[in-house]
Image 1 (cartoon, helix red, strand yellow):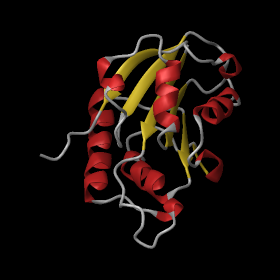
Image 2 (cartoon, helix red, strand yellow):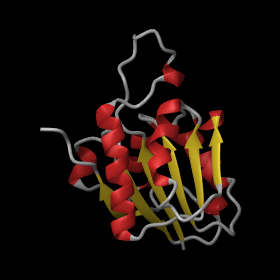
Image 3 (tube, one colour):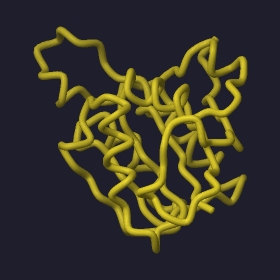
Image 4 (tube, one colour):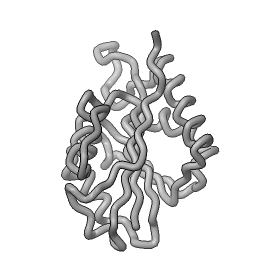
Length: 166
């Protein structure tokens, strides 16, 4: 059995403020969402064997409050996870060693949203309404080897969206 959690980075500053897209930080809302994610993981006792994180600043800032609660220091931060399609996300996951059973992948929409839709055997209404920044979606896969991972095999076991500002 393999478990995968996909996390879309939290809310970020708008584009067009003189920063390259890669260098955009979280805004205040995104910082609060990251804290809410850390609290949720703690409350649910969710930990991971391995974390894959985009090297974009907003993805790393989403990861930072999670570090004390994720249960691993095995974290790969890579530019190759930056703003990629769902097919490339799948390819990266298929390359994981089979000794890893529970993975957190932190990346960007639309790749995260399309991955969630394509992995799902059944699509909950919340997913149909959209994968907002800070959304965490957990799957289980009846697999022994990551190389066998493919679309339409995942059972959603968890969805968390940080509370939205009123």
